Length: 113
Image (cartoon, rainbow, N blue to C red; front, side, top):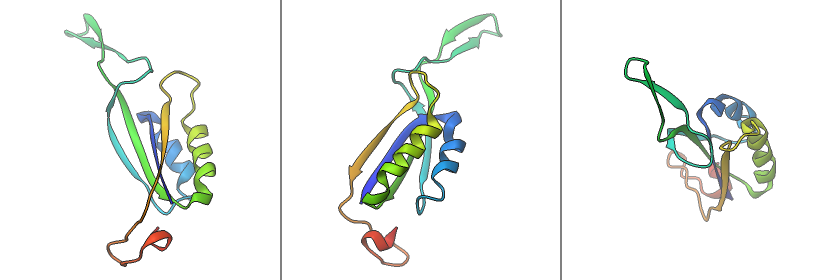
């Protein structure tokens, strides 16, 4: 099993969720602030008379655990849905998962997904 975590731009949550919803058993979306290679937003302040560059971008991390056989298809779906061609589109991290336990059903491993 693998855990896939994709940190993407906040406005891409809908397209990414639509792309993977039928491919995975479930996923979690955490919204927050991030700083990476992407250009940060210019914000207006001081009653609209001044501008400043935001310290962070609005990002979301989409996390799911899947069987090894589904990893490449899910990576492609996320990459295609989150792509804009600009720096800061995001990053996908794939990690090995040793075990998964479903608390309600007490199932383990792939059955828990």
